[in-house]
Length: 560
Image (cartoon, rainbow, N blue to C red; front, side, top):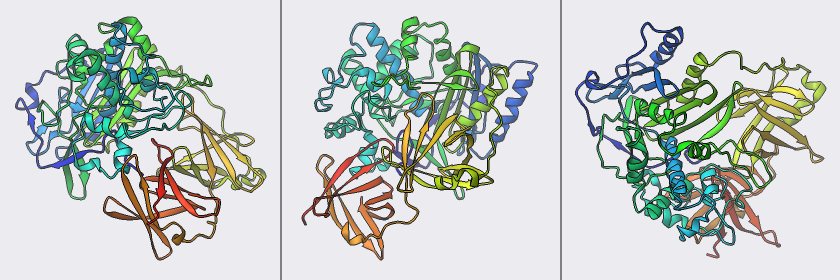
């Protein structure tokens, strides 16, 4: 499958171009409380796991209503020059940037320069949505149905891994699309195009780049002096933490090389994020109405309320309302969790995307959150597998909307959800209803007369997903039926299918891969799930590709 990074573009570098001020001692740091509280000592123990003199690390802060009550940085900012991380070290925060983009649009809304319910074509006519109207609000909420530009670039063979991605690149490829993933407002699907378009919107309405507008209206008023949207990948960033990724014998230096912003592009540190956090309690930028807009969650056409607001998720965690967003880019990972009722916020920034900053942030939050709000669940029922015939639900399931596959396995008189290499034991509620305690998700199995089943997964604030059970035995098929050239005229790309023994192969971007069969006319590969289409005579004439962020992109079979 395609990468889950917000950006796929990166370059391996020999060194990190970073302006340092000597050792970390020269950087202003927020003093830690003295003596340390039990919670602070417990956080120290959690953070110590990332403290190595030969590895990247993390920068961590805990805020109360915007005031820093704990901060610490461990590990290295620059392995080549032996520079340690400090709380003043500046990181790429990737998709966590979306909240700043959303605030910029909200400020223009408050200025009367636009309305969130304006159609996007009023300002960016290059976006084609057919006869469907797409509003700015729907783009901000990820309910517009617009396709993800990064996935489109990958499908078109542009390979963003080795090129600079500019604002014009985004607009050029989106302008080729004349269909949406779904009707606006019918569903929620997280993607990056919407917020890249918001950067263009800010520029066309204000006459200033998002970088300039955010500096003038957000960062400088909040004294966030180390924070910026970086829209030129060659710019130097003072006190930058170099990005790294693990390799077999050490570390590779890596940094994003994109020049478009909006869906990402903010560089900041945990000290500046405290000032941004404080703005949600005592707004100096935007005012109370702007903050309420930022926290306004999407509501679908059917009335279902989603967890996504404007550049922020609003969810429940241990019974508390949690406002959050994370981000992953080449070399970096970030997470910020806010609990408004407790005036508590945790920020974790890392210069290694393999670090579990989401898990670390929640572990830290658990130390400071009151215990009294935790939801007590009844013990799981333990009927026997045989009595309920749960084995009929075991197998692989395909979510046709996103192309994602999951597996249900049986073990120890229970069902287990296997997804992305991890096992999640399910709690039996009643009948065919189960709970995934890891995310409070509800799973409902629906057997049918054919002997297969459908699995509906629901998590509060997210779109329910319906997955079809795949057959345990694959029907007979022949690779020769699918061999040939298939083209998508919008993307201007042709893929070639061939065979290797009994296997079907796909050649694109001058590389060949073997495609896994899922069911009759359905296959899975790096681009996503491929569903082949037949005409009235039963001949294969086309296929569609679907993945987590794009659906139903059609390739037609060529006659030669």
